[in-house]
Length: 499
Image (cartoon, rainbow, N blue to C red; front, side, top):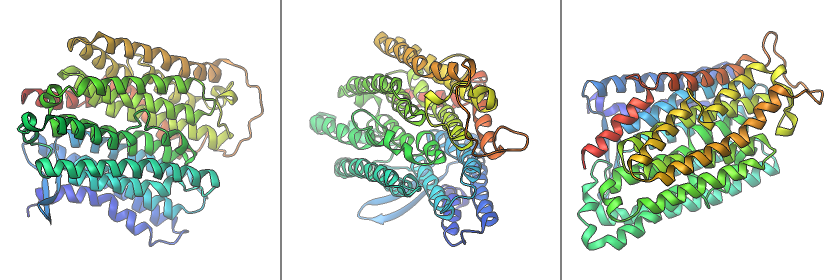
């Protein structure tokens, strides 16, 4: 095998090897653990950059291994996998820094950081999967790797949340397994670049293909938090802030959304999905999820739960754009995969800063906190405005392309959904911003952590400020050749040029 064939596997292993090594360290070997964490995070980012430059030069990167019975383990790099893998690797670096500061002095850090690295390994494997069989392997690997992070605190509440998480995700995985086996019987291992295989079966097996699609959506919809399969997500907010950030921005929910994108565009193909009448019902499910999540967010006083229901709503934008025909809407869906991740991780970092520094967990406790923690709340405000869709922040770009794409596709009702959702976003984010900046403090805060010069330790503040700045930068420079939007446009144009 050549180096180009090995590189996808090396990228996956770049976080797996440090994660496994961490389990063999003593709990008090902090320096060694931190070095392994940061080495793995930076190495993965460098390798992905190398592969991206190689793709631009026309190189191909694919690893294949025959696992028997006509099954292949396949890792392949294309622009879509690069988009997701780049998001995962960049946010893993900042989340690692944040987690090191957040968990300073706490128990079970070896276990946490070991599974933390394995979780990112699974996410990267999902991104680089070349067929549905490989995708399913890493999809279930992600479920098992994330569970110890959800129950990390070890409290009864955390254990109950972990049980709920397992019931949903293992149930969804079982349904997905049925779908993958069914898909294999119909069309083989289903390479993601062979959409024509199922199209050839459409005349004879149209009903079977429709049923199979919804079985696969049900399996993927659990992690994508589509209503009514979303119940695990708000419950899982009992996990530490770095885990919440990982769940909402990088790993679990993004794996579900990414899987839906692969299913529609790279398994069924746009023409077949449209021919079978699958896209409009999928758009309706996404719409229900968008509105339901926003309405539930409105009534939450717990800050992390409000952010969780916001994720339920915002993540469904990706499914809605995927179900809307046209390059513009598809590009909007794909770029929101990135934009939502960067903005949402900022919000969870800020929520963690408030909890760890001042012991604030509820929105009713936020009055005047912007005066005590101005940088944290400035970062929160930028990300919240982006979620609402205010220019020039990243969220505006996503919503603009989704709205424009809906009009191009002849579906103005989707634009109405987006406008309604933005109004609801404003209704549950603006009161937080107003309370933090414009209301007088009504309590003495119980300061849990102090920093000599900053409002909170730099390992907590730095990642929040960095991702907030990135949210602003990728909105301001969205039209540049190296932006996530440009990559999303290239991917969408490729899909539609092959019709």
